[in-house]
Image (tube, rainbow over all chains, first blue to last red; front, side, top):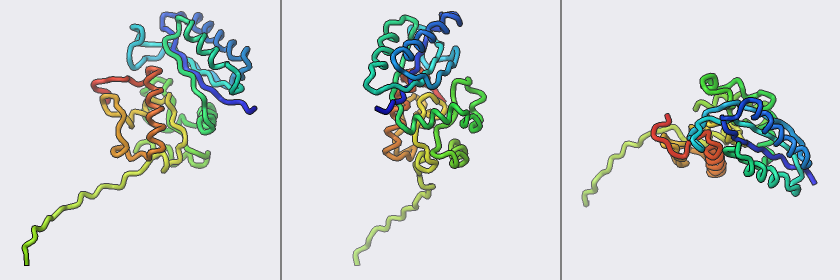
Length: 148
Length: 84
């Protein structure tokens, strides 16, 4: 069966030291690869300010994983279970990516969206720019439409 | 002939609204980009109706999902007083 792409965002407590955070991330990574997942991309936003406090914390370490796995392998269940058991995790979100999303993420990884928007510079590098225009050729019109 | 009251209505001419996703060929709305989603919520953090943003139904649903995901991972607030 064809593999499905999944994406998972975890928010870890800011009380962790850099090293502890790395360790936690590594353990999740291991969990993904051990359960037959194929890690496509990972991204760390570092300490990011949250829009509202969670457990009285106003910041958190954001970590994003993108991985491909068999849809019937219970990898997502296992991952979510691990998140729930882990006290360092403030929030998590696991979603299945459809074909447009997968394509968008691929383009995002290649850094195609970094040029538009003036706002970007003010925002933390976390806020990755611009939604996705369809084919590569259309990149230009999209950037101009963003500001409308 | 009966007198008929004449209503003179001056039409307000506004540029026609359009769905920005359709127009620019965006097919996926990233929930990790709160700056972009800002355009679809009011200053209390509530979703704006389609009649204001002009988004087509198909994409309004996607916007709604994206905003909700974004709120869940605390990149957008559930409630706010003055966001903009």
